[in-house]
Length: 271
Picture (cartoon, rainbow, N blue to C red):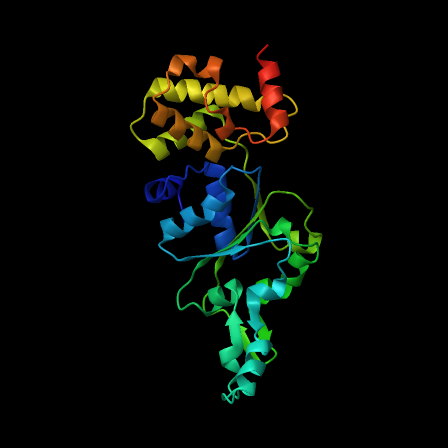
């Protein structure tokens, strides 16, 4: 059982109590935890915090638009085997040409690990369905060696999504779901304290209030995230910024905003 305090003592991650309850339920039911939320709400950091709190290794599978489900299981390097055979090497042992992916690595680990499948919605629509058998049965078959690879210890699976695509219903049925709301102002101040410790409280107050005012500007293409607020505070501290001038001058705004349109929106909102 993980408590919020376990995460806070092992990392700078500040977790809401409801999120921790959901993490514990997913672990108890031995189901993947699917976490959604806008960028910067700590979805990826959750997996690291859970691994730290439990003293377990974190295995990260970063998903891209070109990623296939097979990549997470294993790949067979037929080109290298052909190359070796042409130069007289012994290629009878097929195992040397099998490279296990992140799911294979998690299954073969001698100890239970936390497996993060990060940003699953970046892949094509069939990707989640292609993992259903392996995630249900905790095993997969290696055609080239005629072996079935079974998980030595069922990994704790955390899956993140930025909701760029809808995930298939069959996949969703197998997951425990949690949506991470963007932190409220009070929780954000806790997050800042966890990152910075001893910091000028007036600077924090003015920076955080200004940050939320910027996020409230209508029609922003990309609202600044928690990680960008942390970076902004680092910039303000490094520059010795005057807290009283932050809301009026908006120093180093390029740390928070990354699109020309958003710069114009924020500047227009001040007039």
